[in-house]
Image (spheres, one colour):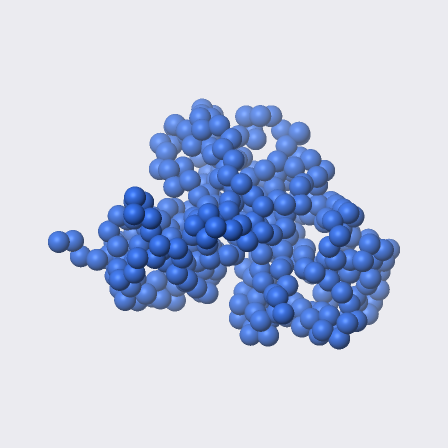
Length: 365
């Protein structure tokens, strides 16, 4: 049986998660969506329906979607849903997990990789993070959970942009892109988002595209000339789209922001590039050691690598201590063989990472 795609919806309190979710459930898309909410509170989809004290609560909604609330472990809820689905007691095509506004998405994501039964049943499609544009700067300053949510994101939606100036919006986007340059950023109004920007994003796919503008982070602090929002796009090397409905959109290559305030966020990203191939054994040893030491602080990392001994690209990515790699398509004859990696984490030692990666390359000469 095909794996059940799962979307993790995160964002700080009041960012609009529930509004987006309501739209997702009420849209005439013909899909049956199971929603898992990991808190009881004012923000539930329908507080009247969900007012119950029972430990296990699964409800069929009017449009065929089902809704659950977590009183226990996420893993148990996922197992319960899968078992009921196998027995034909509930019917759903995909899962959306709405996290509490204060949640760190890390443990939620890890649930899907650390339990064999869950990994054999579900597929993490993407992490969507909603950011309240009006209050984001303060929240990012004050709360590490908000910064972590940005760092984990495969897609960032900005809500309430109509309540701030264009200049403030640009400053916020600039800050978010320095924290996470691989997530496209899009303003949304009252949760109105095209479904193809929410579902089937394949953010966790090991594919041959590294969705980040590597030059963005190299831009001079006072000349932020790279503001392209690189959206996920089809892997043309494989000749098919794998239901990835995004396309690359460039939103103006030049948008200088003269009035940025410098935020020294602990969640930062950096891009590593190398034109010499990696020595596979050295790289494996180094990444293993780094993940062992810094894993809890490494939120997301991904790379397209030129590895000695193969004509094919090596695609790798990880979340915290969990890392995976796969062989991608062959390097094209006229293609520049360059390894590119992006690391997003909390106070990562950039110099140690760069030095170790440099030492993992094949020796010159």
